[in-house]
Figure: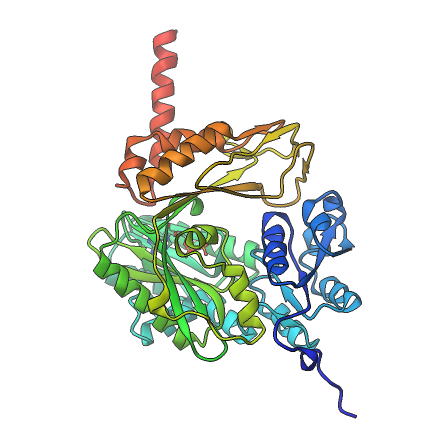
Length: 472
Ligand code: ADP
């Protein structure tokens, strides 16, 4: 008798899903599963024994020691946990194995549904210079630069000469803001090229880099895509993630306060075209740089659910994780492009256990007391609780504070109220930083670019210096 694949038993939705992640996103996925009547399996490392995702899931499996290379990043352990619990699908969340094409291949060979796009699409989009080439061919605007990777400093110099300085050298396998260096002239090109390559080799074991024009004063605008396995592709509007520190997002909002309806339509349509050309399926994000003059350029595609997905959920009333599960189970999108309407404004602050007054130094340890804000227009996605010990092994995000209002002004007011109510004791957090940003007239005016945080912090330290001088 031929071996029946696990998915042959499926009738409609999955019965059991394993979540290959931790923290708030693991809880987020458990919640979506619960709404759909799907049983959940949590995996956890020894450092996460007391974690909420373990407690909230129907079943849980310890997959190894704290170090993620021997737990959350180890495909063998994850697949073994899925096999013993009879899970039909694996949701990777974000980070860890979410954009690992080999893991998606392993899942397929084990007849386990990977909740995300096909392995070859992850591979294709993970190679940033190749993805850029593909988008260019599809007619999506891209930042001027090298056609693929550059093999020598001479080649980089030649391209820089053609497109003009400043240029940015970027790792082809890049992510998380690493492997990126700006060169303002011939004199710093060599250092930028060498450093970007070294950083890329260290972080991604791949030193390939490409060159592109460094767009001055851009905003970061990204489009949320949903694509089913039947050829339907739609977008759910944009998120504005311009508030970044060292290329890492700190505050996100939807819709963007600066796009005109025409540009909004053009970016949305470009993103849909890009996803179609890539053969994309499931939820994904296409990131663009937006220039003050209204032009926009493809930057990269993220083939997973994003940290900042809730702001899109708040303004569209569409549960993105539910859609991911439905798409992976082979169902059709329930809505068309014309069904998508944007309602009001949503903002998100990433609350990290970090000390903003000490260069955002991580602050792991025990949360001695916790009060989470509430009220109309407030959503908090968190795995933190009073007495929870934040392990030092993983990322420092402990909560996402999300607000919704009829207007940006209302969403901002509600954020200020919620930040005032939020109490986290025992560890340092970025709450005080967010409070200061939300009371800054420049932030309130929405007239800034990706250099905002750097300038804001420089302004603050200059002001502090003034105070110290006048006191002494
Ligand atoms: P990663 O995958 O590491 O996050 P991205 O390509 O998404 O890298 O870039 C992260 C951030 O770096 C962007 O949001 C933007 O602020 C900045 N950036 C990247 N490329 C450029 C460019 N060509 N010009 C100006 N800023 C850029």
